[in-house]
Structures are given as structure tokens and as C-alpha cells.
Image 1 (cartoon, rainbow, N blue to C red):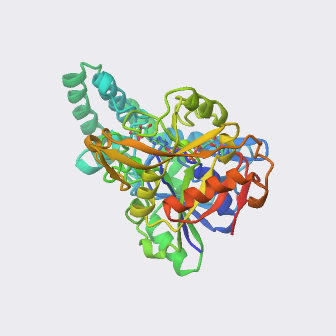
Image 2: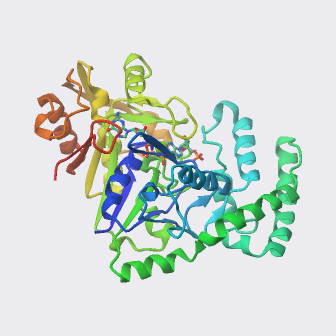
Image 3: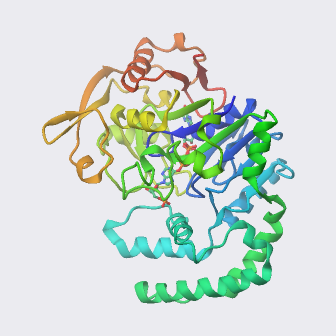
Length: 425
Ligand code: GDP
Ligand code: IMO
Ligand code: MG
């Protein structure tokens, strides 16, 4: 079976945990989009890993890990990730493959991200400052880019960096009055990246198709969440890649028809980091309760996540445009202790009710959630292994969400560990 796992909300749904579980039955795990803006948590025994670029299968010693064309690779973060695993005696030698066509995030991308956000002041997007937008913009612009394969030819790379850095310096000085950056320093760093990462760098598209022909099972690991998709999310408060499942074929060169199941990951409530509309947000005691109980602080930036009620309109949209077959619902345990829960089942926009998510900032910011209230439960769920052993109100909550989003919930998370997962099929 080939699976694709994608977030259906605004990221941080628990994709890392779901991929880690499914990776037990997969030969290969592929990250196909985004970059080090992602932070995927995987817990193995007493060790907690926050993976930013390495696929979440990397903690399993026999899993082949692919970083394909659509990812923007920050070599500093990737090398750090490789070293962190090595410290835990997890080696990636011979099983990490990086696309030669993946674009490289360099220091000037991170600087540009920061300068732009600062200059936007109160209108900033709230990016992760990982250089994601600037790197993807350079990719689309085509003229000033470095791809992983470019690290092979040192002489050509040095000349390329001189041109790019001169161009960036003009922009940084004109727009932000910023100090110049040096091409030589970046070139020296690139030589270190080349020495460390070129042994892993290949044509991953060829590798993936040969693997498919050889009957290997592949797990495609989405980053971010569907509502952060550049084309289909809450633009401009999105990331710079296609973070719905629609980004998978383009990001790795494997047609979607090779995927047997698209699995959407959701939380039992909603969170968002960064700016942008969030109709079911609870900027109050309830939101704080969820933040504290669910430890809702960013895996990449440490920022407190905005928290709110479960939004079925938003999730149903992710299900629809992503062709989702089944859903993994995480963090059911976090809702224990709330007397009543609300589920947003429709929006009212200018007095009209809709259940189709408007991926348009002007209309979405007018959306007033229409809630239904359901009973909560007080029991701790973190030791429950069987769906039938959950409190009836927790079971009913899951079933009601299934009804509203129109897809079966096959995994239920009751804690961060692998073992704290209820399988329903
Ligand atoms: P990702 O970006 O989608 O991989 O998610 P993150 O790793 O950024 O954030 C999810 C957080 O929730 C991590 O700290 C996980 O360890 C944790 N987590 C995942 N599933 C569950 C769950 O079912 N219950 C609880 N309490 N925590 C969970
Ligand atoms: P994972 O894979 C949550 C958000 C940022 C910001 C917007 C744009 O861990 O779910 P960017 O740095 O991409 O230009 O920021 O997107 N964002 C995420 N939010 N989880 C993520 O990844 C995110 N990746 C980007 O907070 O609002
Ligand atoms: Mg995350």
C-alpha cells in the first residue's frame, strides 16, 4: 500500500506521529513539499524528535527517507537533523536521498524573510522566518537560484553566488536599508554543505519510479496543513507551497494515482500559528485551557498557537480538495475536562449560511461560526486502547465529526506516544 498523509487544518495536526506509525509498514517515506518551516514531532521511547526536514520515517533504522524536488532544503537545518539522530545512534547512511533538483535555502533567504516581515509590521504574515517564501519566490523567478545539484560544481557555484548576492544586496539596501552580505561567506558554507550532503544527493524521481516498479511501499509525508496551501488556503496568510495533497505529485514526480489511500490528519479542535482569519478561534479561557492541556506551542518557533473549537467547515474543505479517504483525529485527550464542547458546523456570511469553506480572505473574515453544542467528558483518556472504552460522550464526539466531514475516522490519538493511539479498523 502507498499512503499519503496530509494535514487538514492549519498545520501541527500530529502528522509526524501518524507518519511514524504508518512507516512501520512502509519501505520509503518521502517529504515532498515545504521546508524547515515544518516541525514534526516523533516520540520513540523516552526520546522526542522535532523533525524539520528529515521525513518522520527517519527514526526507524531501516526506512529509506527521500527529500524530493518540491522541498526547499535548508542545509544547516538538515545537517543538524542528521547529527541529532546520529547522537542517538540512528544513522542515515545509505538511506537518506535528497533530490538534486531541490532548491537550497541560503542565509539571504532567511534574512529577506525577516526584513520583509519587520517592514510589514502589523500587517506581517507571521512566517516562521525560515526563508521559505523568498526561496520559493526565487525558484519561480528562476534566474537567481541554487539547487542541491549545483553544489557539485564549485567553480560555477562561486560565480553564481557572486551574481545572486550582488542582486540581493541591491534589493536589501534599496528596500530595507540593510547591511551588505558577503558572497564569500555563503560560498564557504556551501562547500561544507556539499561535503556533507552530496553523498546523499541523487535523482529522486528516478529512484521513486524504480521503487514503485520494484513493488516497494511508499509513504508520502505532507508538511503544513491544507488551509496553508498557496493556491487553496487562506491567502495571503498561507505558506509558499501546495500543502494540500495536490502538492504531492508535483513535489515528487509521482502521479497521485499511485497512492492507494490519502489520510488526512486533524486535531479534535483547531489551532493556528501566525496571522490570518480563524473563525472558530477562542481567544479566551477555553483557548488557554486547550493551549495548556495540549501543549500548543510551535514545534519550530515555540510561538503560542492560537486555539479554537473544531471547525467542520474548514476540515470538510480539506477533505474535499485533497481527495481524502480516511482521517486520523489526534488530541482527543486534550479536550477532557471541558463540560461542553462546540463544533462549528456552518458559517454565516452576510446572513447566509454556508458549509463550503470560502478560501478567500475577504469573505472568510466575515464568516460567523454556527455552532452546535455537545456534552464533554471529564475522564482522562490517555490510557484508553479501545474505542469502546472511551466515555460515551467522547465516542459520540468522534462520530459526530465523522458525520460532518463525511469520512471515517480510523485513528484516534489519546496522547503523544505511538502507543497512545486507538485503531478503529
Ligand atoms: P505536525 O507538524 O503535524 O507533525 O505536528 P507537531 O509535531 O507540530 O504538533 C503536534 C503535537 O501534538 C506534538 O507535540 C505531538 O507530540 C503531540 N501529539 C500528537 N498526537 C497527540 C495526541 O493524540 N494527544 C496529545 N496530547 N498530543 C499529541
Ligand atoms: P507543520 O508541517 C503550522 C505557517 C506559519 C505562517 C505561515 C507562513 O509543522 O504542520 P512560512 O514560514 O511557511 O512562510 O509561514 O505558515 N506555517 C505553519 N504552521 N505548522 C507548520 O508546519 C507550518 N509551516 C508554516 O506559522 O502562519
Ligand atoms: Mg508541526
